[in-house]
Amino acid sequence: MFKTEVRIALGTNNHAKRDAVVSATGVEPICHAVPSGVSDQPLTEDETILGAITRAKNVLIAVPDADFGLGLEGGLTYDSIHTQQWYLFSVCAAWDGKQLYVGKGLYFPIPHEIGERLLQGGTELRHIIDELGSTVGSNHKEGAYGLFTNGRITRSDVFRDAVIAALTPFHSALYK
Image (cartoon, rainbow, N blue to C red; front, side, top):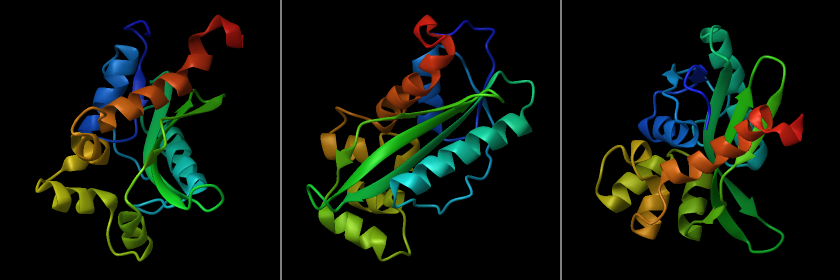
């Protein structure tokens, strides 16, 4: 946990991502939506990481009095080598204007049909999850993780772990 006087800028207004930052740090972030520079539904690990990094850097420019810029990006990747399976994962990029660290949340298998539907284009995972869960705005709530696990793992939980991983090098003496 950080000291409360630390100022964290978060590159989104998404509720689940905000909750993840508060849970990971004990600090209320300054939420400011900035572009990720990637597609609305990243379908590779590289694109997802790039989106998180771009958000982190853009939000620190937009909120220059912050100590850290955080970019949180959810994405999918296909494992063509070991499992031939689609995975949902979350990334946090933390940028202080000098150093950049990236933390990742767990990789969670999703139904193959959903991954293939996303690969065809024209929709995002959040729309499919809203449809399957008969809800609206699932990406601001428990997300796909919550639907697939009946609430045992939520979107905020997975992003929280990514935030902790990305920020740890900034405050742990073991990284100095």
